[in-house]
Length: 200
Ligand SMILES: NC(=O)c1ccc[n+]([C@@H]2O[C@H](COP(=O)([O-])OP(=O)(O)OC[C@H]3O[C@@H](n4cnc5c(N)ncnc54)[C@H](OP(=O)(O)O)[C@@H]3O)[C@@H](O)[C@H]2O)c1
Image (cartoon, rainbow, N blue to C red; front, side, top):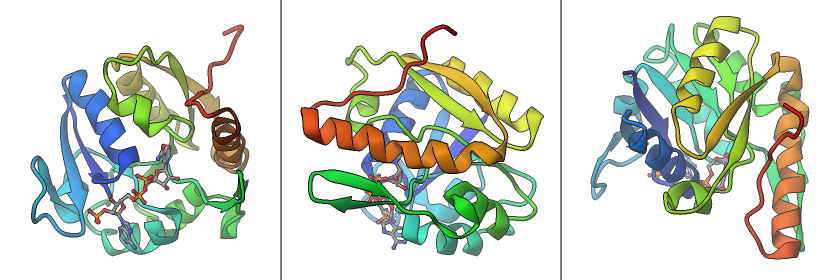
């Protein structure tokens, strides 16, 4: 089974993905800028050495983080779960980064890697709580058919998640921006809702 590295894996988003993947039998390296003090962690460089790499840093540090690892990430599938958002009162608003999405920005920073988008709408608290009754869809997009199929196969092995291949990188912008809707609903209704497509 593939090993999965998570850049910025010490945050709630990375920890949540790691918990679910580990429960499905994947070996996961939680990358950090500083490996000191982490239990199962390593550096972001060690995480980048894994077969599959997830970007789970804040949006405004994702390009610097991935760009610095460009050589190590060459030829790999890099999964972006990054959303560019800002809080305004009781709502989140979507920001529109250069190139329209964070996934496209990361793809531009990593021209020798294959970028796939996934995990954008999942509430970290439910991901990390393996005892929750999470039953979520993970919308996946990429311009590379094989890479998005590989990511979908990995996600389908994970309890509580169903992979849904949405389509190409052209969907990155609306999929990332929709996270603002999800979080705003969660703030307003004091809950952790998530995306589930009906009729599939
Ligand atoms: N939270 C959620 O429920 C959720 C769900 C889906 C997607 N996401 C997305 O996942 C990403 C991470 O979310 P999060 O809530 O886990 O974020 P976070 O806690 O703010 O940051 C995650 C990790 O990124 C590293 N980091 C922080 N500032 C950095 C910088 N300036 N440069 C490089 N690394 C830095 C930190 O790790 P070290 O200090 O150990 O290096 C931190 O633990 C975001 O893009 C978010 O939009 C979040």
